[in-house]
Length: 401
Image 1 (cartoon, rainbow, N blue to C red):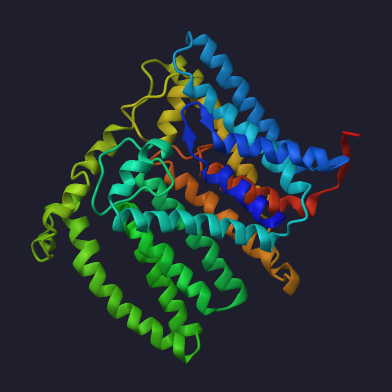
Image 2: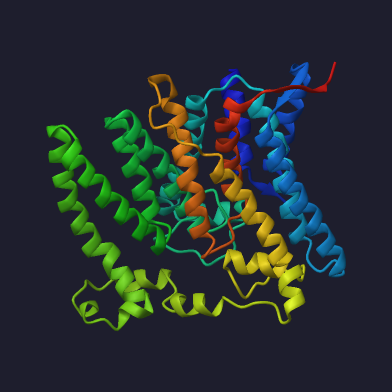
């Protein structure tokens, strides 16, 4: 019962919906902190917790300064920073003072990410579900018959979370060996990811090719046969579904001679913006003057989706530098032990996954803002603090009794 309740609260921390001003994700974080403080005489923290919290506090404080300096132009600039800092504080104290080991944390995160993928598939099967869920997830775009947003506010964000789940499972296979349940999970994340966005499709295709080559050379006979079937079935799917969509919606491919040989996608291509490549290039623009670029304007630019550009407009290169420093610090704390013993395999899975997911986050921000953003921030912070538990040494920081 305890594990279920903790799992429910952690799930709400990662994917809790908003009802007006009520943010259930933030509420669940505060409940976890309150329960931890109630049952623990002393709170245990470590250097990693204090360092991350210090960087995020600086980002929040700077966001507040920019917000006031801009004449209260856009409250989003401050609220996103404060929300992320509070959830980091609550998650960190809970994880570092809980008895949950790496394996439990990995299982929790995979369950949460699997639920998001399940909702993606359900929204494809039952399109009306998207209408009912849009308001509580924050989704405000045009609905599509072949794309779904899951428990997130956007198509791409749902797909990139499928990629995150995929990374966890892949490192399970690399560390523990090939197991049927992990193969099933991989294809589960891949199939759901196909119904989110084109960039996710491309990532999934490359991952599947690499995985099946791995199975072909490293797997048992049954997995070798499985991989050969996958190459055939995957080729048919790519030719009939993925390639036609890419060739008929990406400007730099539409004029290519091969585009005339692919199967007509009919109305399916209408679910994707055919000018997205040109639009993305137009989204890279800086504030009007150097001072604003350095210090920030305190305004979230709606003419750009690029994460780096949004941060430069909101909190300048100064704020962007602190934000990048946060994730570089997370990367720097992923120290791989290649000779990990059997009881350290879960830690190795968590550490490797965290490292690659954080690297991918830098790439994802070329499309949309994911630094310190809902869903992604919580998943990374949970994994980071679970991995940092091996460094827990500073006890009796705060005495509550």
